[in-house]
Length: 46
Image (cartoon, rainbow, N blue to C red; front, side):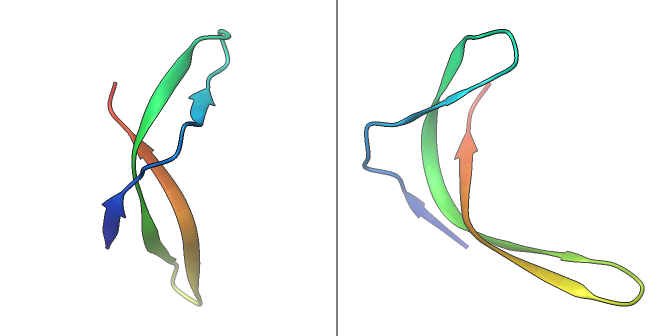
């Protein structure tokens, strides 16, 4: 699930450049023993 991000923050990556946040949402990571819920996941386009 995701929704448009309307804030003014950016994501800074390792080389010091920044990427615009496009969406914010939630996701889950499943392992053989657990499921981890991730909230407020920031999504961007390269």
